Length: 104
Ligand SMILES: [Zn+2]
Image 1 (tube, helix red, strand yellow):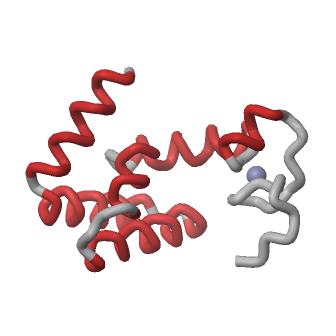
Image 2 (tube, rainbow, N blue to C red):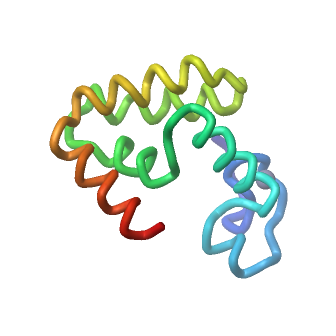
């Protein structure tokens, strides 16, 4: 992905001016849309981050599929990849859910 301005939204590419948005890497609208999409397919940003950081290359690949599904609005497919990651990660997945529950 082309990203000339380091202070640009990672989703739509628009320039970010708000410090909170810059720290997050995406604007308010995009962050809200992203959270809504992830929640609608049974996932979360924390889960997506953990999937992307997985040592298993098969699992870390799923994060790219989910991001592509997010751009295409394909909730069914994203839910499928979250489910596949949950199965593959096993006990590591439980840790993510516990961390997310504590943060909530
Ligand atoms: Zn954006």
